[in-house]
Length: 342
Ligand code: NAI
Image: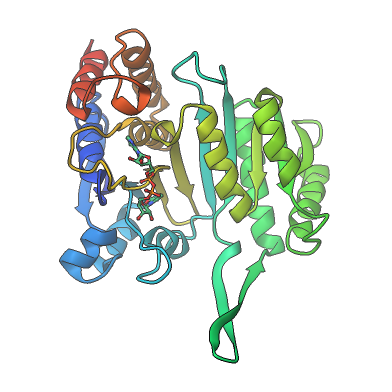
């Protein structure tokens, strides 16, 4: 029997508790080695502890350095700052890893197998924004500052190359907009080209592509890509785009990896429109849990989990409503547990 691995569990808001329960049931069936420390954040944090990211939650992740997290609600415009962004900053989660792989065949795009690596801490997401008042309009001008550092670019690009080589991938595509944002994203392209020459040439192919052309190519011919690495805002958009190629957000997992911790989550949000109705698809969070198993060197269990998901969806044909099926969260989870055990 392997030793237990302490990990923080945040159920999250909206459908979070439903998909986390489903994920735990499947992980239990798999005898996954995690010892959970349950904590709160997001709206649940505000309601129960007066803080969307309570100190106890931060302390727990500081201790375990590992977390599985349901979606957290963030108010748009005003209100509190995103707990997700604060978690990234607190634990220097510089890499956001979003694999997109076809699980249910027969969609608009088949046999997709891509990874988007998004820089998670810099770029236009640093939150340096303000308005300038002109006459009586306090919002007459809106300004945002972007920031990319040489060290930050090097860290994420290095991570992407390492990850690609470890997985036996063939190509890394550097996505930028250096023709227009010559400094802000020029530094990203320049750093990639230097690092490639110094460290990776001959081991793997590197290409560079401008973000707008990349978006078009991903829709016309996604199979030409393998691993894509890009700055924060472009990565945010591209990772949703590639999720769309494989059946939408309900199927997309994500990992936030840093020097101090790794946090695994579904890419989708808290889906307040279906919360509490027993309809949510837990697959994205389950795939995130599979990534977490890979991360703790239990890829054997991660692979078993991915296989069980594949077989439940394709052989048993048990699917939730968002995938055109009729199963609720519970029936789908039971089918998965049966697959894991069988
Ligand atoms: P959303 O992803 O929650 O929902 C978009 C649509 O997809 C909805 O129709 C929803 O019902 C559906 N959907 C999402 N996940 C599903 C699932 N697992 N099964 C079945 N259907 C699913 O995006 P939305 O509505 O823009 O955001 C809601 C809240 O979630 C906001 O407060 C937002 O800030 C937060 N959010 C949190 C994220 C996180 O914690 N990582 C990521 C994205 C949004």
